[in-house]
Length: 313
Image: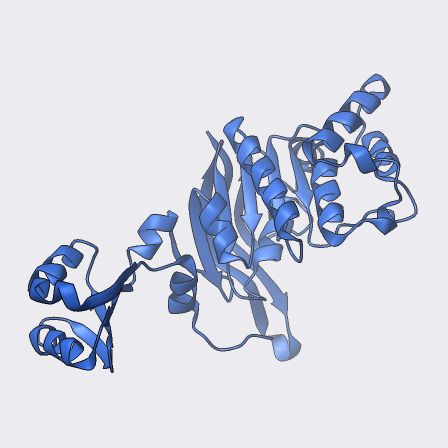
């Protein structure tokens, strides 16, 4: 089932002299139930704007948004009952305890009073904060506050979870706990829509990735299909001495793209299958080979390849 559908979505803002700035331009994508969908892009590319449009906080200039066959603007109340958001800012009450924060939000979300305690307890258990439930949130670490914000979002048992950089600035343990909850949520057949600047997070969690820049789609696909699109399979060879390295260079330089420095050679391959051909070419030097490594492209390589390496403000 398509839980989120975006068709020809545009968001424009008027500038001086009648000009328009497009935060989003002709954006199209669909998200299935049970999927973790990651939206990636440089700062200012339109990621948070997209989340705000799905949530009904921002109206499109034109185009169509459907959340479980509902319009987020026209059917805002129904859509809000189906999804939950974890924004970049946790927006918790520091002077209240974790339990008090969740009790307040249980009331705010309209959860039936008889279910308040059980829902709050369940949320605390899910994010591993039951033992600290009576401590003021102001005493929590950043990672604990992020986990509590996730627990707050799960109070209503939503069908769709919108996560805007959910592990921003958290420790490794908290990040791992949040990742596990995201995976479990998707395993239940529900939908996770995720933005992140951490490529390892997208690779660990996402079933499908969309990279945008300046509000436009750059490329989309599974993590594997995106990595397959860039020519970054390399093999690093290190020999016992420079003479052996030079012998290898003499054999390989007309076959592969390579870099050679003293006893080390880096060779660029078209794909992993070429690795075995490479080793056949230099089998006579195997006893002089000190080390070899096969290096595959990462999502970080993909991201920089398609969005560039220049710094963004």
